[in-house]
Image (cartoon, rainbow, N blue to C red; front, side, top):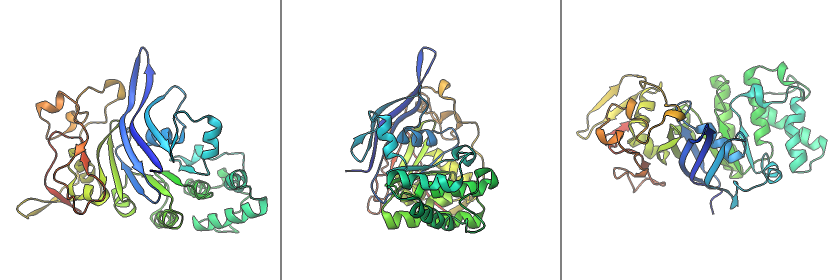
Amino acid sequence: MSLLEINQMNVSLPIGSRQVNILTDITMTLNRGDRLGIVGESGSGKSITALAVMGLLPDRMQVNGTLRFDGQDLTTMSENERCTMRGRRAAMIFQEPMTALNPVKTIGSQITEGRRLHLGENRADAEAKARRLLDRVGLPGPRFSLDLYPHQLSGGQRQRVMIAMAIACEPDLLIADEPTTALDVTVQAQILDLLDDLVDETGTALMLITHDLGVVSEMTDKLAVMYAGRIVETGDTQEVFKRMAHPYARGLFAASPHGAALTTKDGSRSRQRLAAIPGVVPDPLHRKQNCTFADRCSFVEAKCRESVPPLLAFNGSDEATASVAHKVACFFPREDEVVA
């Protein structure tokens, strides 16, 4: 049984007399020890997916479809049951540390709260664990006392406190939403190593949401590319990076600092110029029943503007080496291999 099972999940919001889909037909699974990366532009639905799993969506949003955690139906779980799950079995590193931390509580009390509540530890043992966690995230004592308040720390330091809070109870599922955004390169590497060690040591399943394709390549074994509330390409991380069958995935890669080199069928290679994807992610209110990337795609054809391409297995994938089925939602997927 999968730890997290999401199947054809829709998240909608009532706007006037309409139910507007924010997410459509999201399907993914995580087993213990899996590392899943989710990438896409802002507005693609990455954070909404994470909040749906954690039960933290705004009250007006409705969730339909299958959403199970360790066999339990999250859509019917009571708030008390969710509170028992959050922090202990599933935890989230939020994107914005300024609003995720309680400004009137010390960082020590916020880190120890989960262990005292869920694990029944006494104050001394919980504080000793909190001290070790702060050391691991790069906030060593005595410079960074447990008695400090969030306003006494920089943005990057608050981010590290939030990471310490999330991993304090060694959850079965850790959702990391841009966990290293406010950190410098050295600390970023330290935090990523810490998350990597956590998965190796405890079997935690990691859902990593990020814009950094280099981090995704190094940290994850499964990848989902999201656009306009849908998954447009998914599969084994290295297989997706090798093929990038969806034009949007190629656009993301070409727009990243890593650049792209294409290997064509005749074996020749050409370095692609760093580029931007024209246009913007369509507003949910104005999404059409067609390929939502059609207006921004260089390979668009008439069929793309007439119907929504289903997420299907990509025949060009290397089935012998891929551990996860490679799927793409595109009528005309790209065939040339992409080499970083």
